[in-house]
Image (cartoon, rainbow, N blue to C red; front, side, top):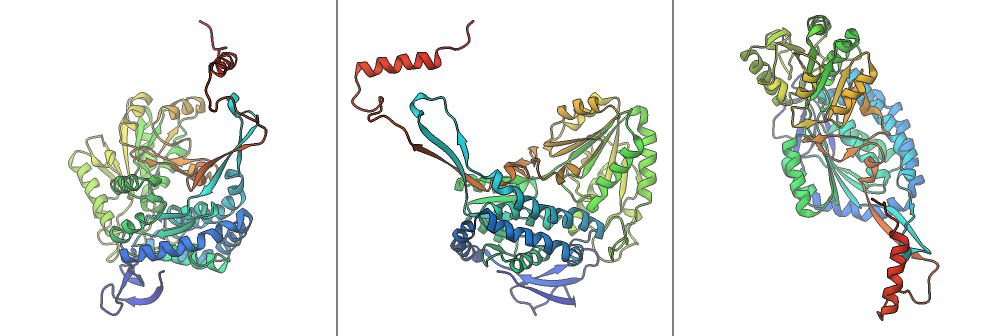
Length: 519
C-alpha cells in the first residue's frame, strides 16, 4: 500500500511530492525519502485485501508459514548492512545500537517463531472430572483471529513494531502494520524482504501515514490491535478496543528503577547504569531511568558513573564505531529532556556530566542532547517521576535497600527494574518485591531478548505481553471442541424429568463431590 522514493538532499518541504510525506534524518535534519501519506480512507480497502488472502495463508499451515520465516531469517543476515543503514538513517541511533537491538533481534525472532509457533498453538486435550462428560473428547484449539493491526513506535522500527508482526503472521493472521510516521523506511524494507522470501501479497501490508488519522482508522477495521507507545495514547486505544469488543495488547511507558546495594560490584553496576540509560539515546521503554544507591557507596558509584559518562562520544552515526550515543529521533523529545534536566537543576540537582550547555555548539542540525548525569535528585523532580526517554541518568542517594524498594515502587509504571548486589539470594528477594513485569539481578534490559519468556508491564505500563507462549496466543482465539464418542442411548439429565433421576443425580453428586476436607 505504500511506496518509497529516495530523494537525496531534497528539502523537507515543497509541493513536488503531492500525497507524500518526507522522512527526515534526525542526525542531520535532511530529507532522505518520501513515503505515501495515506489517509483514513486507506484502511478499509487494505482490510478487505488482508481478509481476502488470510484463509490461504492460514491454509499453508505452520510448516508453510515457517518456511517463509526461515528464509526471511537468512535474508536478514545477508542484508544486515542495508537494514542497519536504513534504521540509522531514519532514527539517528548509533550503528551498534541498530545492529544489537534490531538486526540481531530480527534474526532471532524469525527463527524463534518459525520453530515454536506450532507447539505453542497446538491443540490441547482437556481432562475433566465432570461425570456428565465421561466418554467425551474435549479439545481446545487456537485459531487465528483473522486480521491483526500493529501500531508501531518510532524508537525501534523493527524490534517494537515489525517484530510484533512475526508471531501474528505465524499464528495464521493477516496484518496491517502502521509504522511510526517518522520512521517508516525500516518496515518498508522488511516488507520487501518478506515478499522476496515468498510471502503472498496482501498478507502483510505496511500503511504509512499520520498516526492520529490512519492509526484510528486501522483500529476500526481489525480484529485485534497491538500498540507500543505512550500510556496516554494507549488508554485511548484501549477505550476504543473496548467499545468494539476486540482484544488489544498495549506495551506502554516505563520509568525503570535501578537499585545499587552497598555490597554490589560497583564497577559492573556503574557500567550497566551508563550503558542501559544511554543505549539508543535513552529512547527505550525499558531504559534505566532512575538510580537508587545506598549511602555507603553512593559517592564511589557516582565517581565511576561520571568517569564513564564523560568518555561517551555523542557524534554523527556515520558508521560502525563512529559514536556511542547518537541523535534523538524526534524533535519533541529534545524538549522533554531539556525540561526534565532544567526542572531538576532548578530544584537543587547538580549536573555532573552533560547538560544542554555541553551540546549547544556541537551539532548545528538535527535533534541532539548530550549524555547527562544528574545527582542530588529526589522525587520532587520530573526526572525521577516522569518518563524522560532521553540520554539522562539521575542518581539518588538512599539510606538502605528498604528505602530504595519503596521509592522504586512509588511510580505509576512497572515495566522493568534492576537490583545489583553480590548476594544473589538477597537480590532475588528484593526483585520479588519490585512492582515490574521483568526484574534483573546484576543485569539490566537484557531480559527482553529471552523470546521464550513473557515481557510485559504492570500498572500503567500496559496490558498483555510479548514473547513467550502468551506472546503468540494473544493473536489467536480459543475454541473448545466437545466430541461425544461413547455415550448412553439416553442421557440421564435430559427430559422428561422425574424423581428417580433426581435422586440418582444426587447420589452421584455425593459420590463425586462429597469427599471434601473435614474440619
